[in-house]
Length: 126
Image 1 (cartoon, rainbow, N blue to C red):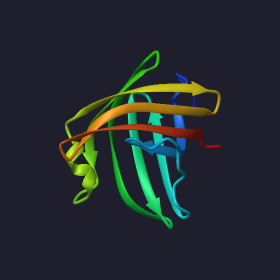
Image 2: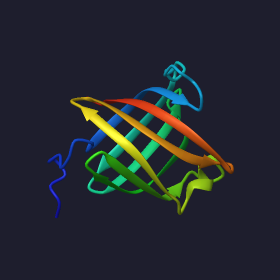
Image 3: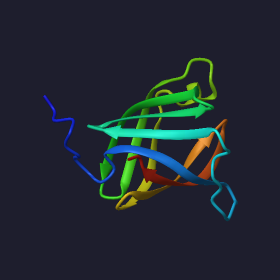
Image 4: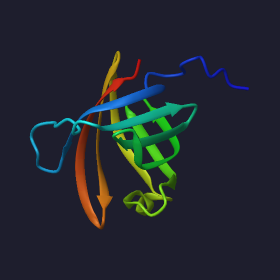
């Protein structure tokens, strides 16, 4: 049985997104007031939830793997009827850099048939 109190790597734990940048944007923008994106990463599994005013708007998750700075997620489940359903069964590869309780993910993913680059800033939940 795994020891769930033991952090096994630098990305293990709960993360709150504090900024995002998509496409050609040059600056990271925060989520609007009342909107929160939380990502949980533990023991090769990940799940994230997007909430607005305390209610889940959408969510998805599955398996994940970190090899140095290379991070991959395979989406195994998603919020029914939401935009995230299109990601089920797909694997996405990112770069994940962590310094203490701050981290950043960089990558490209196909959304509705179009390649989209992104950068996300995260802080560890405490």
